[in-house]
Image (spheres, rainbow, N blue to C red):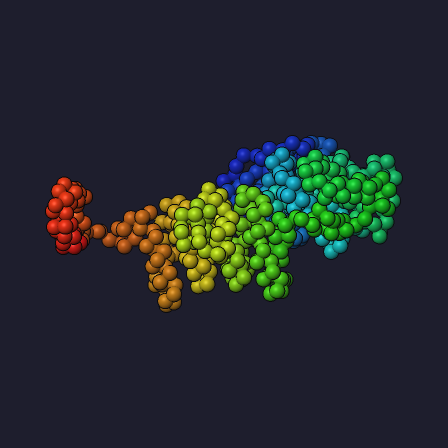
Amino acid sequence: MGAETSILENCEIGAKLPLKADVDWVVQEAVQKNPNLPRLAIFTKKKKDCKREVDIIALNAKQLKVLRHPAIVRYILSGHSADGSYLVTEFVKPLETVTKDLSPVEICSGFYNIIDALVFLHETVEISHNNICQSSIFVTKDGTWKLGGFEHACHFEQLTPKFLENCRALRSQSAISPEEKADNLCISSKAMHVLDAYSFGKLAEEFFDQLKELGDLFKTFELRIQDEYLSRDPKQRPPLKCLLTDRLFKYENHFLEVKLFLKNITLKSSEEKTDFFSQVVSMLQEYSEELVGSQLIHLLLSRFVVLNKDAEEFLLPSLLIPQQAQNNDSSEKSSSTPCSLSIFSKPVFKKYVIPELVNIFKVREVHIRLLLLKYFRYYVELFEKEEIEEVIFPQLLLGLRDVNDKLVSASLHAVADLVPILGGDTVIGGPQKQYFKEGKPKVCYIVQFLSIAFIDSSVYSVTFYTYKSVCKYVI
């Protein structure tokens, strides 16, 4: 309890996030006072209603506390206060707040995540969610869809008409199947998935208009949802795991392919990694840099990727050299390496890649640091001065004092790149004094001799000889 209180006391609670659905809870952003700690989300009950006496926050927390899956909202803590129950999770925002801005690729990726979470619930822990709808789905800062809203979930053995009747008034009407509305439920132990299958079909239907531009891929998916998962006959609804192999997720969807590969990179063979990284840059360039930066950059710069030799050869040059920096360097411009295919422009690089690099610079591993320093000169100008002073420069100074000579040398080069930004006095660490003087000849002095050379052609050779002698002496 002390730890819970401590976390809440060290948070600044923000405004309530907007919600369109008629739900009994509110969610607020909580910013921890320690800037190195991530933002959180706090769920509390919206209002007290005599008709709705169920503590939905406590019920949701009870389920989330024991469920661990990448596509399920991550539980942090829960408890009770004078205002009632509260639930703290990783920072997420309701899906309905971002639906209008979603591209077809993002929607497909989101569908896959929710299906994956439901397959885990049905096949592994034998739980029925019972309320699949937009208000039970949340989006993380990198655009990942996650399943939440477990206040009406139950284990298969508890899934009875009586249980569903008791919570029907609190559930989304779109998530309620036709047989339940008709009070004609016949729940089979071999088909416990049918209620969630139907509600997922209704959820998918809400995004059909945004998926139409996918053409034939969408048409196939649409027909499958309508004919199978929205069938009025529960026996015709197949398990949701069958959808994971749908063409919408498997063919020509390189974005999802990249995302899934990176998430499961530790399970891939060396041959699979070599094949993947040799073509990943061309796959990423099929999509907008904003989409790649917002949703994939954390995975692209994960430890297992950065330490992979194939990623180092094929991916990292294109990832760590901004487009404008690459264009300004003739040696890189003429190179045949993948760095000629830079993924991000400077503004997008600064927005998404720089925050990741700031965190990675805190990692004290030689190979990772050497890779960062290899491309340091290309992106150093994109750091905020405060980031350089508080993180980058101190980390470089540590590298200067290391026993590894390669790291010391690379760190020295990087420190030199900081001089135009911080100034020599800051980088060197003491007052500066002028020891050298400017010795270049003045421009007007040279022009004077050039003029003499062309005034009188009869003394051309003598004047030219004198000019060459003087210049040699001055230089």
